[in-house]
Amino acid sequence: MFSPSSADLGQRGAAAMEADGGGISKSVAVAACTAMALFYVAILYSPTLILRLPPPTSFKSFMIRRFVCAAVSSVLSLVVSALILPIRSWEASYLSGVYGIRLDHMWQAVVYPVTLTSLMYAGSLVLKSIALLASWKEQCNDGEGQPSNCTENVLQRFIGKVFSIASNVSAWRNYFVAPITEELVFRACMIPLLLCGGFKTYSVIFFCPIFFSLAHLNHFFEVFTQQNRSLLKASMVVGLQLAYTVIFGSYASFLFVRTGHLIAPLVAHVFCNFMGLPVLYSPRNGIVSFAFVAGMVGFLWLLFPATYPGLYNDSIENCRCWQRYCA
Image (cartoon, rainbow, N blue to C red):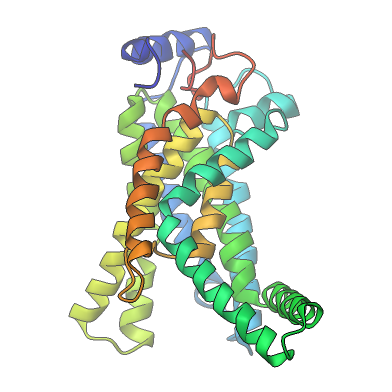
């Protein structure tokens, strides 16, 4: 349950809409969200198909073009949603609050969601720790067993890894551009529209990821055409990706609605991109499977307490239609 009075959220949301000068229709909310999702994908192909720019000369230039397109899509989505939503004040602090862009309760919105999300990756973290320990032992052997040499070698490899990530354009896509632009469009813009459209909270949490998955359908054409996969294999690969995006999209929407903070799903998005798919088991280490099961139990146990709206907001009363975390 979201709160003791969660059964009344629909009525409270409707009342809040009236207080804000009326809501919007469900059809307008769905149409706007669909247009945003399709535009987020379509604009990626606009440089060559619409603007008729020459093909990029390198993978880096190709990705930079996509970064610019994703940024333009995000800004336009923010503007469109602001024009549709029943916003009565255009002050920067008020408007940013509509999208969950806030500075208050920042450390809670970062630490709690990352900690909660990490529980799903308990098996992965254990496996990575085992690999790190083996690497550390290997470095010690290379350093003739001297502790100072071990520490220096490990530190050098860590610094090298950081610089490698910082200079990798794919890393910028996975850990910076994609999380920010996708959370802005598919959480900050779409969820307020759907809530103000009169959709119930749980419906939005499970309905919003459908738009999120639509933005990943272009992967099917890329896998099928560029990687020369068969129709069946391309469908299986993209089907797995879509299933994962729907599950993560529901979780990210849940975090946004519960906390009212955009940074909460954003840091979870970055963490999941970094970790990849959770490791369920390892043939050589039974402790990995145990850690995964224990982590999932802990995740489910702490899911609602760790996202209690009162942890992230000074007040959870008199919320407007785009802030459904109110009690």
